[in-house]
Image 1 (cartoon, rainbow, N blue to C red):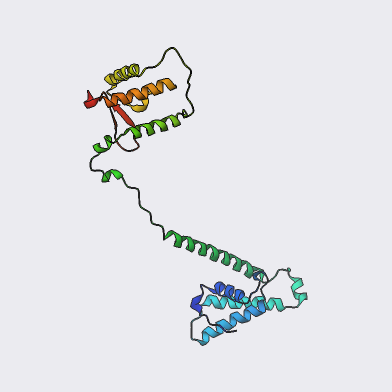
Image 2 (spheres, rainbow, N blue to C red):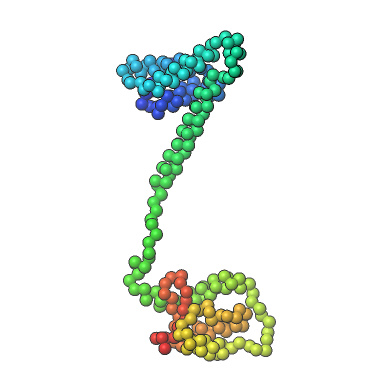
Length: 239
């Protein structure tokens, strides 16, 4: 057997023993103890010939292998007097446990390597990049209003067809303008969504069109303090 590796190539005696078992293509559950012991001792001897220090833990495992080998060489009559336990079983369990730890370590190293390729940035307040917050208030367009109202209806589960029953008391745009004006005279400002206390088709359509007409004629202004915040209807100049 040509041994071309050094003691520093392994993390310990179990690591070396696993390597020898794999190189010999042995079944870890049925280690050929005589052959593997010879290979292990050859390795130790070679290291000593190369004037390399062999750690005591390597020598301890060598002694254990020799002990297991001697037990297996005992006559069957002697073995039968004791419990019929395979002398290799404890060593096999240690090797299996060590292999499991090696596999877990390898998996964690791979995950660490993948994670090192990911770069993240801590959350930051975007207000730091806004020169003037008031500029955002003026950016409520008709499209913004329609989209916000659509989401409001969805939250209210009213995106299904509204009640379309014809009644004698029709809701006009002008009547809703008067009602909204009264509300604004009292409150000065109110949430856009608060102006829809009744959820039927006629009332919703009339109210929405009334708000648009009032905004166009400057009877009210529509503002938003920040992105994603509530939309406010208020009297111009706080009048």
